[in-house]
Structure formats: C-alpha cells, structure tokens
Length: 122
Image (tube, rainbow, N blue to C red; front, side, top):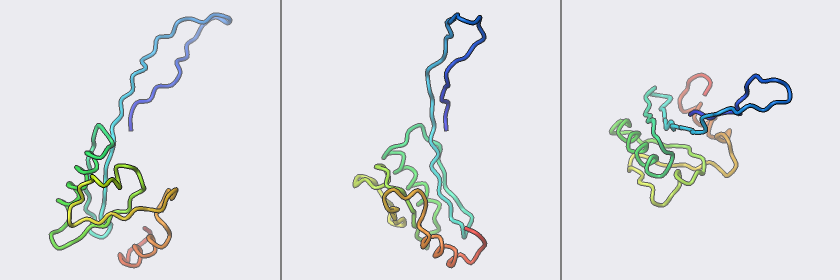
C-alpha cells in the first residue's frame, strides 16, 4: 500500500515540451495480518518496513492473540523474512512454507481447512 507516482502530463501547444515538475518521492507502508477462520479472531500490524524485524513483531502479535491452550499454524510463501534462521518463532506457532512458485495454498490445504472448520466456502 503506498503512493507510486505516474508520468506527469499537462496541456501544451503542439510541438512544445513545457517543464512539468513532479514529486518523485514515494512512501509505502506494509500490512501484516493473520486470522483464525474458526474463532474469527485476528492479529494485524501496519509497519513502515517489510523485513525480518517486522515479521518477528508480527509473530509476537499473533502469539499474544492465540488462546493459551491453542496452537497457530501459518501458511507462508518463501519470502526471505518468512523463513530466515534468525526469525524468532514463539512456541505456540508453527510456520508451514508453501511450495516454491505457489501463489496460493495447495488445494489439499484448503480441503483440510474446510473439513476441519465445517463451515461454508473457505
């Protein structure tokens, strides 16, 4: 999520190229979120960077939101900050990496989730 500027356009006489000052700065923010479909609870953070420190904060936020007797399982793509050896993973969370070049969870995961939740479409 953020501001990404396009080329500047302006009205001018044919054959002329007037100066068109444009703000080239960009600003971004990153959303980290997780949800438990069964309980309807979630944990989310809005952070200025998307890196290992941000992922560690996000995991701590999730761990705090998980019920004391429960265990969270997170499906993650293979971004560097998701699977780093330096990532601090709380004991009540298990990280499950998706296969490489897999933009969405495998069908087996969706089917297992659907059966375990016994709800409508997942």
